[in-house]
Amino acid sequence: MDTMGRHIIAELWDCNPEKLNDMEYVERLFVDAALQAGAEVREVAFHKFAPHGVSGVVIISESHLTIHSFPEHGYASVDVFTCGDRIDPAIAAHYIADGLDAKIRENVEIPRGMGPVEVPAATVQHVN
Image (cartoon, rainbow, N blue to C red):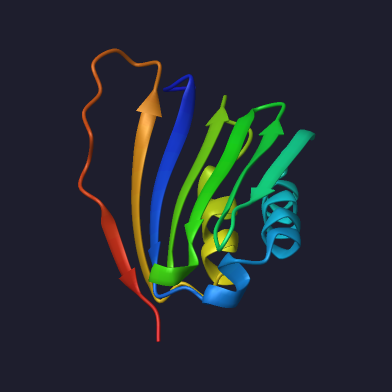
């Protein structure tokens, strides 16, 4: 193992606003994303804001997945952090982006626990 963990920060734009505002959908999507990546789900907590927006966390044995959604902007801020080298956080991040119909996806992956952080450039993907 080269790192103690991998942390993906995903900026998702041009998402489906109805999905971003549907707490039950987002919660199910995040649990499914964790399971798709092979993680073990421990706790789930989501909150629906008025008039719009969802925030939530899925605690996994390997760390966590989080979201803050802004349906009025078609935007979601997503973190997927996994400890160890058994789980690939990119699998969960991609699953989430697909599930929210994100047309623009900016991902930064940061290795954790390796000393001073060197933040790599974001990878940007435009999906038609």
